Amino acid sequence: MAVLHVVQLGHPVLRRKAELVPAAAIADPFFQKFIDDMIETMDYLDGVGLAGNQVAQPLRIAVVRFPGLDDDGGDETLSNPVVFINPVMAVLDETSEEGWEGCLSLGPLRGMVPRRRAVGVDYLDRQGRPRRVELQGFAARIVQHEFDHLDGVVFADRMTSLATLGFESEFARNHSGPEDQSGTASDEWPTPDTQ
Image: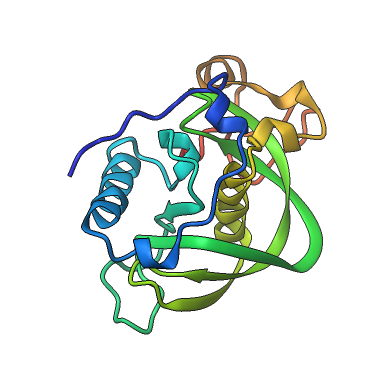
């Protein structure tokens, strides 16, 4: 496996809509190695998710490692890492919640981003089998973030206010606790797992 180069904001591929992965290509050894390389890259960089666009391959694929989910589960269970090929997402709960997000393609920047509370995802797994999963909370946030990449969207585009956009190191130096810019406590300190 290899650690791939993660492109940074400003690279045009991050603003490009990714293309569907042909079903016949999924079993190709080169594509399977690409999946392994994406997982290796995500883990090496301590991320929780990585999309094809982020490694300069505008293909509709994302890999995710959900916190709290066991690795190496059985075939019929959701286990880490999860490979989403050609995902289609539906909102299951219209309620919007704000939470801190970061991104491997935006370096040490963090910001408060509104996301839907629960989503359902239809996708193909790395064997090309159709799957469906329903996610809520932080897990739903991760997939919304990664699937945004597949449409050329970064988390800063979703922010309702840029007042919370900042560098992780500055938040750590200049805030005594997990507070947002208005001084109200937030659920998480602005140093979540990078997505």
